[in-house]
Image (cartoon, one colour):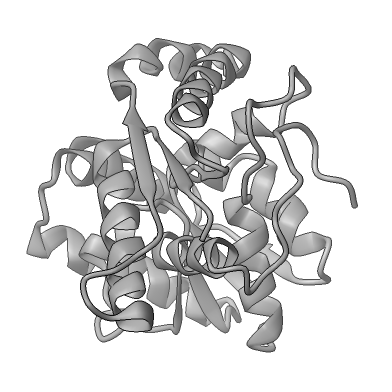
Length: 242
């Protein structure tokens, strides 16, 4: 089995991915077993000034440090359970110390397999207004829809003020359901939860649309690679072709 390295960016999303990976291993392998996994977490505070300044290269450099650390710990490949971070990961720059899975590719592939056509995208404002999901979904002929400006501000605020701090509020869950309902009215046939903390708040039973849980989809994809059931990744950061 291959050794997974997790590059944490926000602790809550990374912890959920770590837990999901281990639990998937238990179900597949039994006996409390799962492939080896190493998680490295540089505090999000180190990158927030760069995010606010739009300095994505600085974010990339921080994530590269995490990649070096998990590589030194023996990891064979990495995942980064943070969708916004992939804006930085996709920038041109030095190769990362080990190859990794790209979260948006995993989500977009699942949307394609499920026969989806129009995907609502919920995440931080960096993700909703950024290029990653427009590219990944568009490359597969899928439409990407984001909430209107006021709803984007609400979704972002709840992530940054509550979810990344582990706060789960019923009022916020209702707000997300309202936003998802509006996406359904615009013709979306699924909503992608592409902030890795959102699945802690929005469960399938709450959402007016079927959900694509980016955190658990990434964990499952990582397990498939670690068990040798899916091709070993070759991407080491940088632009995604096509």
